[in-house]
Length: 153
View 1 (cartoon, helix red, strand yellow):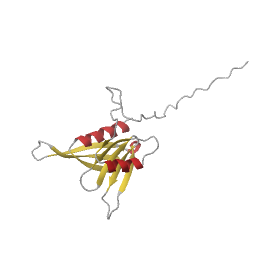
View 2: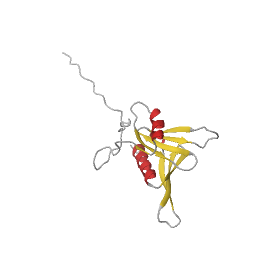
View 3: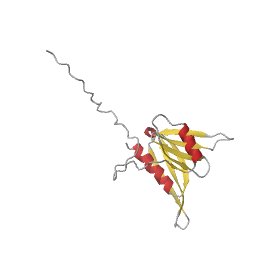
View 4: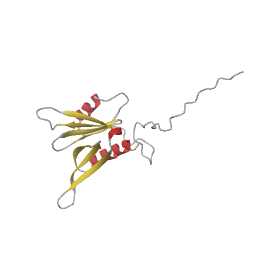
């Protein structure tokens, strides 16, 4: 008598592990973001309209200066709004985390060096660098840390 054996699925040795849906704090083993960190509700609405199935918004930060309107961070990608086009045209760019090569924080300090007036993040995507400027340092560091967490998984 021949017994039928159950097939066991063995993962391919070069297969990428499945990504976690949210970053986990190594100290508490809990997701550090429970509600999206949002500056303006209308920006959250713009990002939320374009979400894919299963995708969640982590943060949406308002930007300063010319060009970028906001930076949205989801569980799958970075969403940047660019207002630097002629006329009333606006571009919304999605950058999947798997295409991000590096992310940097650049801080501008005051002339006396007492406080930081603004900071920015630079996202390198295959030779193209996307920059976003923020007031203060906190938002740039939060965005940097979230992006870094997703690109190193």
